[in-house]
Length: 153
Image (cartoon, rainbow, N blue to C red; front, top):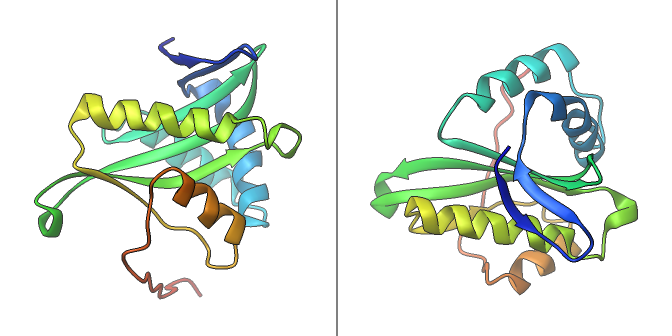
């Protein structure tokens, strides 16, 4: 197990493992306010754990996962470099306001430095104003407008 950061509250930020899948599944169902297809989720999670361009980190408190962040690495032509994109960030509600999200993001910053990213990007739902403020406090700033076209039936 690779420990990336520790906090005074005994929270350890570490790379996610297969054993963290159920907790992460529950986090993302809560984040998206839906029930995700568990079979598809598990298959994608297993696949992504082996992809060196995808980093899954968890916040672990006494062997219990209380938070999660995912960062997908892309080599983008329009940036002419390696970019990390935060896909998901989640902290269990009872642990919010205790700097767990900031610790997870600090670990992503460390990864970005170690792997030579030229920047980090994040997209969040425009209705999550507190989330936008959280990222702005971490030096993210708005630059683009994201548009989505659903292809599912």
